[in-house]
Amino acid sequence: MSRVIHDDTKVQCTGCGYCEPHCARGIRIPEMFRMYNEISRHPEEDWKIKPLYEKRADEGRAAANCIGCGACEDHCPQNIRIPEHMKDIDKLFPVG
Image 1 (cartoon, rainbow, N blue to C red):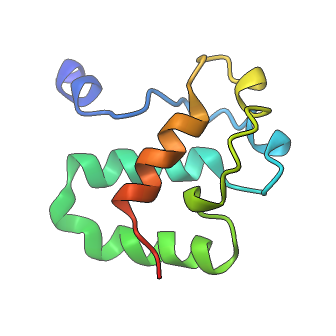
Image 2: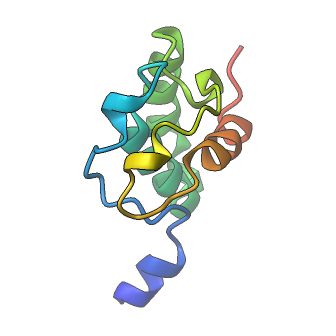
């Protein structure tokens, strides 16, 4: 069962939050990854995920606000390519 969950997970983020204080734009990176993983596993439940993403967008804290500086990556113990995933998330959740 855990293999199925692992295979359906787009980003292997543990949610530690080490990246978050280093984001120049204040993006809640672990939250973005949770939403991305959730909608990837259950696209039929976008009705409950998209409003939360839109709220972050209204606050200027959506994936689209990522400037790709990479400061967050320097602090990620999982070595996640965060700016690259932010681009993917932005494509999945178009705002405006």
